[in-house]
Amino acid sequence: MTNAGKTILVTGATGGIGKVVCQFLADNDYSLILAGRDVAKMEAACASLPSSNQGSFSFIQVDMSDEESVKSFGVQLRERNIALDGVVLMPPQLAPTKDCLPANDTWKQAFQTSFIGPLSLLKLAIESMRPDPSRAKRSKVVIISGVSSVQVLEHYATSNVLRCAWLAEAKTLAFALGERGIHVNTLSLGGTLTDKYRSGIEKRASDAGVTFENRLAEETSNVSLKKYGTPREVATVVEALLGPMSDHMTGQNLVHDGGFTKSY
View 1 (cartoon, rainbow, N blue to C red):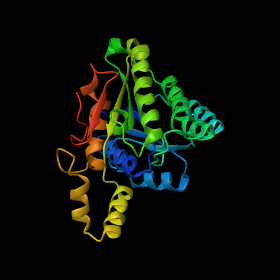
View 2: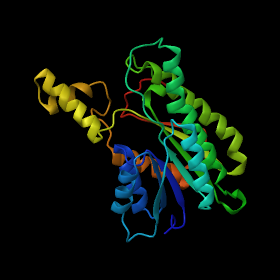
View 3: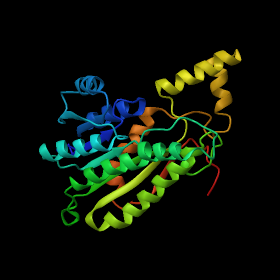
View 4: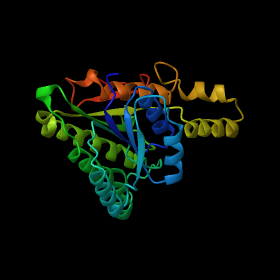
């Protein structure tokens, strides 16, 4: 198996997308380090992964909004002598808001939670990578963002800024780390039918007195494919970006939105 012996760090590993990404990578024989806040959920997630495959599974507790927690994560990564071959970074999402001029404290907290903390964790992860381009050994970083990184959405005011910051940082890291054989790409997601997202549609359907199917059709009417994505479809692209497909790609942003974004 080509992925046997490769270790990937996955943040947000117990979320709706993270769980499916972990399952998909495990099915493809990657070893995984899960990162998240809830120990019980991560223990359950590790136990649910296929033990018959060649990968191994463990976790490190971390709260990316807390600087001390991120430092502790780095200590554990070093103490375990873990050499990472890749990272799937899912910065915490911000709640929708139309407030385009929030208070300074709101901005400070938003940047700490969704940019500064995750970037500090990514730095520690990169320090644990051992790529060797001369031996075709490359390390891959996939940063999962949202479609407001490429198209402004009126109800995601702060996210419009933060997600663009991730695109810029990924491009910067791509230039800085490319010679070392570390690739950094981003994946911008449109609507994705996680359990939580589906529950939101169900509530909106109930409030409007329509069926789930009718509400879903209405919400996806401006999507070229007339559907939202699934977590498994996301996992498929993530796995591709971790693999040989991206051996000559870095600093790129893939838009995974079914054709919602109408721009060149």
